Amino acid sequence: MPLIHVHLDRETFEKLHEEIGTAIHDAQIEALGIPADDRFQIFQPHGPGELKFDPGYNGVDRRNLLVIRVIAVHMYPVSTKRQFFEAVIRRLEPLGIRPQDVLISLTENGFEDWFAGK
Image (tube, rainbow, N blue to C red):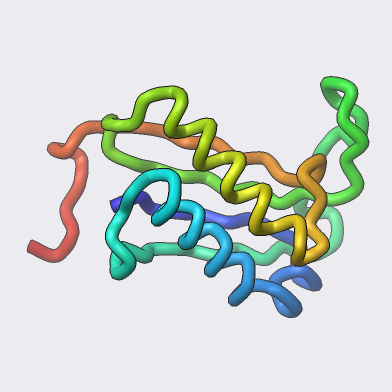
């Protein structure tokens, strides 16, 4: 049960939050093998000046910032995580979201760190 947090500017949220949520979820199904009904996402839109980033850090031409933070049980090899990152980017590009503007962080913990309703 990965838990997804998405931070993005308010304008992008208002125009594309449904499509972004679906893109991330479909990438999870494809790359992480989660069940289709395992969807837990929290969107946090931000106003002007609330998202701070260096537009040229690490040689990347950043114009905007969309942060996807994933918290998941430690069970995925590095290759699977990379496949997930690539699947997310592949699905966001047709929405007009540039790969250079996306930051994804996947943090893992143990099964004992979760409660999911029962």
